[in-house]
Length: 363
Image (cartoon, rainbow, N blue to C red):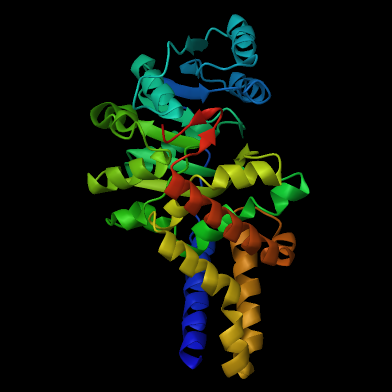
């Protein structure tokens, strides 16, 4: 039991160090002049996004750079996504609609959409962005400037997450808790090891030459966590990448309820742990049950242990622009949610049956 207490303390210490590094060395985009001579291709895969895509296109319309092309690939939507995009394209010539002619065997829908978008893009930079993202100001130009400054092939950003319903507040923060307590994001840029790779498909900005050479979406055409797979592959190829979070000018409402979060996170939670269920469940045991051996065998340090947990909650919340007090109070419920999605993900992994947007991703 004493050894278990020491392991729990070491685990918490590791979490604190990682999240402290993320807080202190948080990488930020700085304001820059738009590169007027360079075309930036904004590439939006969309399937049943009528409720979201209009807001994103409205944001992009405000972008002053006339050398911005906006391509939307409708992936056989069954709602009014096409009509929304056509309405915008009629008012802004920078916006063009592409429509799927069918999903080839062996491809997942989003990966195929992204690949098709890249084939039509003419920009020097390709920005793949999800339809439910909101973007402000000259953020795209600032992201390009960041890429140039650090000579990157890929820049990915975790948007600030919008959480409105109780279900979202009980579930969505888990993503940043895992990410920021396991990986100092600055290592994504400065470390040569592929284990220090992270990316978010909601915002992935490629140098076009890098993308056209590697064709990453074709390479990982059947991967349902293609963002992380691509990031690791690029690091293997010695191409510099970076991953940021806490940028207030990009926001996303990933899910609108506890049920949606449960379904969505179940498909990729193990990728945070190198696709290892064993490491995932070990993480949960140490995070959720680590206090027990400390309380029993090292009672004199228990108060410091609790203060450490609170500090971790505040630091990751500040870094990701979330409500620190709320996340701290809801932390036990976040751990319950994490266990639920891991159990469900294990069942999905075993049964190889998981439906996302009316498609089985294992078929």
